[in-house]
Image (cartoon, rainbow, N blue to C red; front, side, top):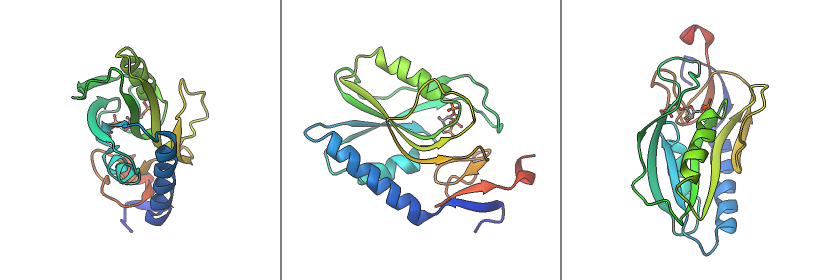
Length: 178
Ligand code: PRP
């Protein structure tokens, strides 16, 4: 285990099982359709790649960059879209793929923006839903795990752009970010 990690919250095996189950659920729900899996870079890249391969349907992949955190461990509460998807969203079945729901400000803003483009349907698949003890403006349609309010990294989640490549989700040692 990486020395900067205090403990593993979700192991590689647990993650693989949860993503497989979610893929099967989406496969059942979207039978006969060709959903667009919209990856919200960069954190969702790992989850997106695994989820796509767990769905036994024709799917299309696209990518959007939205920033809400910058290099700090606290949310700025602001959303900037830095890269738009290439696929025309109108009349398509869109599944927004997010790695983490913290305040859900990002997802809420994305849902608002994308719904104006008149998709046939717009759903959300979230890897981790963090319990901040607050009421969130939106909730995920599909999710893998709930998590307590700790500083989590790995499986796409970063601190100052590091740790995304850890195959598990771990709690970052406090001295690393304090
Ligand atoms: C993270 C994460 C979500 C968002 C969640 O993105 O990937 O998009 O923050 O936070 P919220 O629920 O409080 O809005 P970040 O801006 O850190 O970019 P990254 O994916 O490139 O790491």
